[in-house]
Every structure is written in structure tokens, then in C-alpha cells.
Length: 303
Image 1 (cartoon, helix red, strand yellow):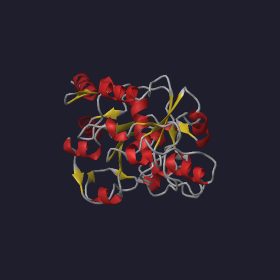
Image 2 (cartoon, one colour):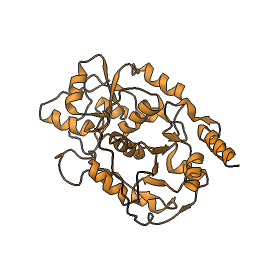
Image 3 (cartoon, rainbow, N blue to C red):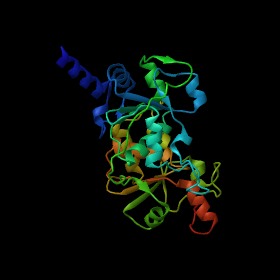
Image 4 (cartoon, rainbow, N blue to C red):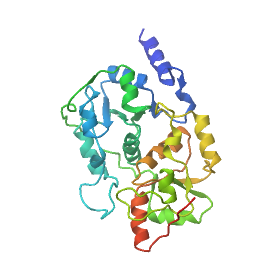
């Protein structure tokens, strides 16, 4: 009986309600149904809901924890005027240990299909492997029938998690690396923002100059999603990027406003499509725009 249950769980994890997740190059993306099963059967699962607190309070998974952008950012001004940068290993450990995370934990990330990928990218860069992201976010998990409630997150627990002492994964791009990539045909600078941001018609809060990084290729992050906010198929995704010359033989450096949308794209390229070298530009347009205002880098505008 136990053997058959394990086999059934494996089959469900591979093919969930008509969508074959084995088409992707890693097992990091899971369906709402698989996430529900994990939550109900694995005591080591910790669910982290990456949405604003106001949204979390009006509906959340029983036993889940809430994390939002400030929780993933530095607690000091080490990056100066550049907002939205990544927290340190120690800061992330402190956040996870409020949720009772240990070395045996598996994190299941949900949200509004965006910021959970930012959290994944930070954790992955620091070397945490037991992390799953729910395809379709909180809505998909709710639709799968998981127990939900109103109100605050689960009670704080004391964990003892520490990242391994290995060096960070090479999935971070700096301003200097992006500058070098501009004139390197082996590199692709990938703008994941809206078309109006790309052309310089629109400027989001936090940045000080309109435009884009010279030589950027534009593929908006939303192009990777179906109407229900789940990920498109492997074939659709590889065709989307190949059409723009974003191919696996290139080193790809995605960016957006503050490396949230580009973290989503980093996940798609790295985990779903298996691109070997993808480096999310954490400073993104905010940092580049400040450098441009100071005359240190150039920008492009228009089509």
C-alpha cells in the first residue's frame, strides 16, 4: 500500500490535471494540486506567501507565513539610493528562522505569480535547493482545494536554518557586468519591462531617467504566462525567446525596474528551459538610471 501511494504521488507530481511538468528542465515548478498534497502529507513543508500583507490578511493558506518585498531587502542603506536590492544571507536566514525553517524543510512559495520568483532567486543564489514555486500562485493553490482562512500568518517558530558555506551561485549580474555585456556578442541583455518602459515613454517610481540599457532585447515577462497566469509550455517558451535571439548558447542578463520581473524571467530561462548561464541584474533600471544621470553610462530610447 505504501509503495502504491508513493508511486501515485510521483505520477501526480509529473502530470497534474493535463499539464505535463516533465516538459520543463527542473522540478522547481509544481501545480496547485501537487502543492496541496505536499502540504497535507509532509510535515517539513513551509508555505511562504509572497504578497502584500493587506492581500494576505483577506485570504491565506492555513499555517502559511507572509513575506513581502521589505523582508527581502537590506535592513540598512548599504546600497545608498538604490532601493529594492537583495538582503544578505544572514538577513534571509533570520527571516526564515522566524518561520521555523530547518535544513530538512521544503519551502513552497506562492503569491500573485511574480514576487515569489524574486524570493526563489535570492534563496537559490545563496544555495537553498529545497524550494518549489506553485504554478499560478495562491489562486492555483486555493482552486486545488487547500484550506484557507482570513487573518494573520502562522505563529512564529524558532528555526535553525543556515545556508551552506559554499560561494553564492553565479546568478547575479552587476552594473559592471552589464556594461561589459553591451559590446559582447556572446551576451544578451534582456529587458523584461513593459513596452513603454523599454521605449522611454514611461518612467516608474524609483528610477530617475527614462529609457533602456543600450543594445537590450525586449521580451516582456508577461509573455511567458497563459491567461490563467500559469506558465506556458516548454515549446511555447523556447520559441518566444529564440525568436528574439535569446538562445541557450548566450549568457543572458535579464533586468527590469528592480529585478522582480527579471527574477521571474530568470526562473523561466534557468529552471524551465535549462539555459546554463542566466544572471539577474539586481540593480536593474533603478541603478542604471542613477548611473546615467551621473553621466557614467548611456541609455537608449525609442523603438
